[in-house]
Image 1 (cartoon, rainbow, N blue to C red):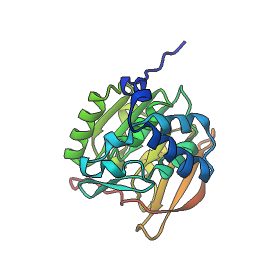
Image 2 (cartoon, rainbow, N blue to C red):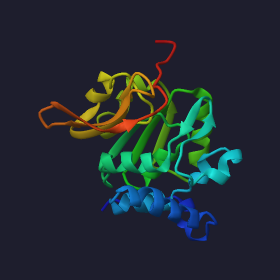
Image 3 (tube, rainbow, N blue to C red):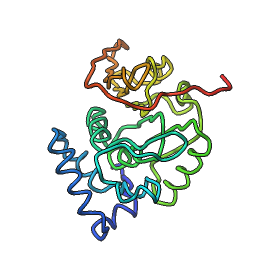
Image 4 (spheres, rainbow, N blue to C red):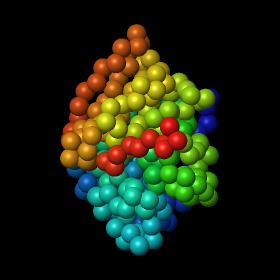
Length: 228
């Protein structure tokens, strides 16, 4: 039987002074807006979002809005994190590729729900910072690296699930190729924050791609490496 790692930070959440704020966040901003997956709700309650935001924004960590994390990047609002996680249909045996590590918060939420998260961040300074953060918090089922998300992670492919936390104009072919037949991809897609939609892509067992829109959304653009 597979054993799944629960980070020490989550084992101690009962004594966390932010616990009441997380409960209120989940009740008022996530569950009340239609998120029903109980495992996703539990992951949102237990993941300490305040540890993924800069100190100057810690008082707002459990407000339902995106917050700046430096490097022209943001941590997504909690409802969007929960929605994308639920749409991904996570299960304990799955391997997930995340494009756009950012603060590491989405990866941490997923780590409570899946076997392993492989996550790529294009900004070198942010990639180093978040790798140190996740390691110091005890996450051992997250592997993070700096790289170009447009290329995916061929060495670890194929993946059961793929999630993008930055918006490309179109979903990169490499990511669709690295998604297993029967797999699912969730991403914001569009050429500007004013013209994006959250989409779910299902890859059939025959390799055919089925795409459906969910809601209008606004994410930072997904950028390519300047060395490409």
